[in-house]
Image 1 (cartoon, rainbow, N blue to C red):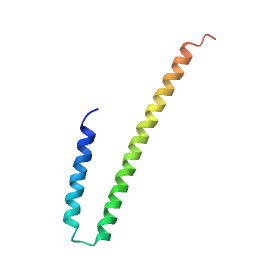
Image 2 (cartoon, rainbow, N blue to C red; image 1 turned 30 degrees about the horizontal axis):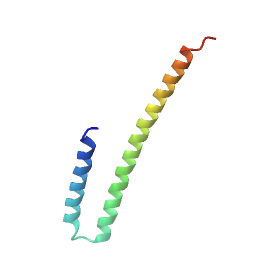
Image 3 (spheres, one colour; image 1 turned 90 degrees about the horizontal axis):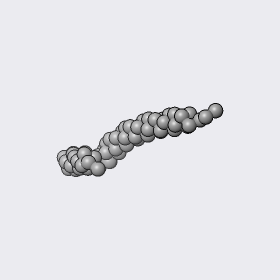
Image 4 (cartoon, rainbow, N blue to C red; image 1 turned 90 degrees about the vertical axis):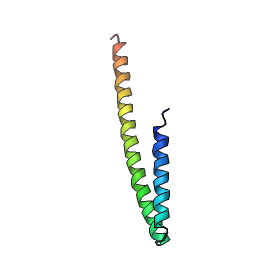
Length: 75
């Protein structure tokens, strides 16, 4: 497994901590709402990305299975 995903997560944690520290002088409710909004958008994007990849892999495997089944069909 490559280190890429860990570096991305680490980078976002650093950015999140820095932005939260700079915004801490603002109202805590505003900071919490903004963090929730950003997290929701990020999680939705990630879910759509993984879902799209998952569906593509599933379709590829199904097509491959159908091809192999037809290859050995002697009728």
